[in-house]
Length: 244
Figure (cartoon, rainbow, N blue to C red):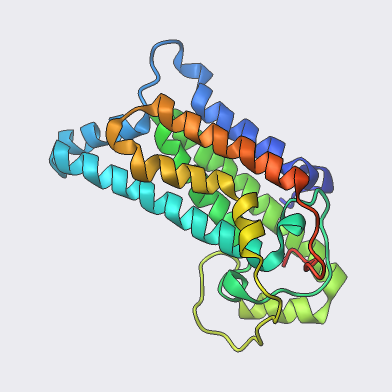
């Protein structure tokens, strides 16, 4: 069930492949790619659960909230852990980081990625969105189990104590862990996490126009800028080296 080291190294490629599969949805054939953002309000109104107009608003708000949660967890988690560590191709173990979102959930970055993809799924065909969410959820769980096993073997008792104090995914707001004193790297984190920010901007400001092509362009530009920022960003002095 645990992801291997090679899967961890190729995690971005695998994630992108699963997202591309959702957009492409080859089983649908040409001309049948109505996006979830348009499809869902129609289905809600047909079921009599909500009027079409209210359904449109509800779906747009839901997508925006998911995107916002993705931004919060990705930027906050990256600021506390360090962007260079987040994007490293190898599993790393230095010290247990228990500051920021890591005090409440052990995997805020993976959780933030899930929210980011869940928002992005609203631009996919319904069956493609379902396929991507299921597959990426399974893959993120595999990554989590593999990383936790690695860190437990490398860090020993301090990490075991962290495992017992902080839940894997669902946040717990209270614990007795001492905070980590490392200063968050907000500017570096924002530059490294431009992709979730671009997804939030697309849904918050452009979803009302139903211009899926424009929304995707904004997201693709933010993804490209994120890659450039990460490639040019040196590791900051004293940056944590643990993925806990």
